[in-house]
Amino acid sequence: MVRSKALLAMKLVSARGKYLGSVEHVLFHPDEPRVVGFQIMRPRFAYIIERKPMFVPLTEVRLGTERLDARNEKLVSGAKAARQLGIVWSKSVIWAGMPVRTRSGKAAGAVFDVQFAADGGVTTLVLSEGLTSD
Image 1 (tube, rainbow, N blue to C red):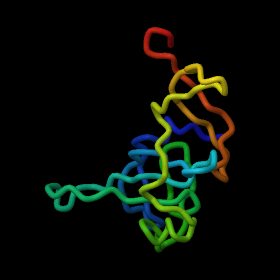
Image 2 (spheres, one colour; image 1 turned 90 degrees about the vertical axis):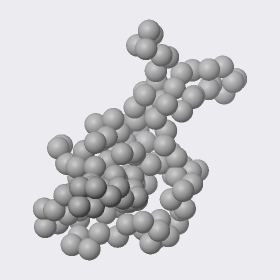
Image 3 (tube, rainbow, N blue to C red; image 1 turned 135 degrees about the vertical axis):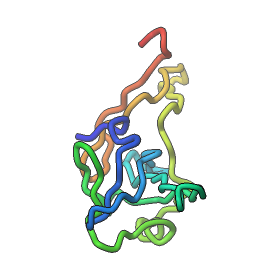
């Protein structure tokens, strides 16, 4: 099982060991309870120019304890990767902080953390009721 909070700010490294960026968000399928990929904040170009974030699907990386490793030499990312998954990257969901309600509509808290299996299926949802309750 992998915890989504543990992945935040984790480095993504290419098959050759090159730093590609760090995990900014864990992204979930818009209609199913499963992780589809990560939003990667890429390093600045020449240490000055900020670059747009990159979408990397879960299928393209190996989840390590200290970093994410690209599975292949050529990393499939962005719109092409989203098309292969059958989703639209901009419609993927960031669950962190999202309010959760019971079936009757009563507020249950907000998403604090998510545990998921290697295939992306969500196994555990950890809720928070706010800083003073935690």
